[in-house]
Length: 122
Image 1 (cartoon, rainbow, N blue to C red):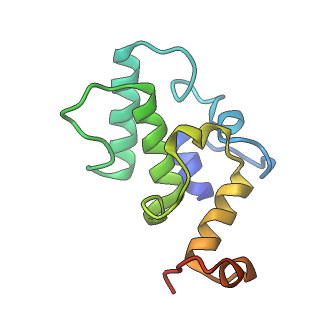
Image 2 (cartoon, rainbow, N blue to C red):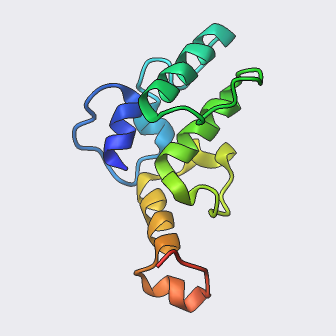
């Protein structure tokens, strides 16, 4: 997930606090957050798709900031994004520690999975 965050930023992150939000960490990256016009959003999403492969965005729809949040959500949660009960609209407020915990919960390997009865991929 750390390398995915660096690839989203398009620069080396160095050490950062795992309790920092996605907005705090990625928000310092030019173009990933903030007030952008539609051309900026298209360029950002094209860069995400170039980095992470086709299919991360739907080419037929109008590009919005929420689409960028959805792409970041899918990149950071990987194949578990479809299973997570989180909304991509909240990804910017999530901490990296929370994202790691969500991935662990759905992959298995922690006591909280067995206690909650949540399904795992293992």
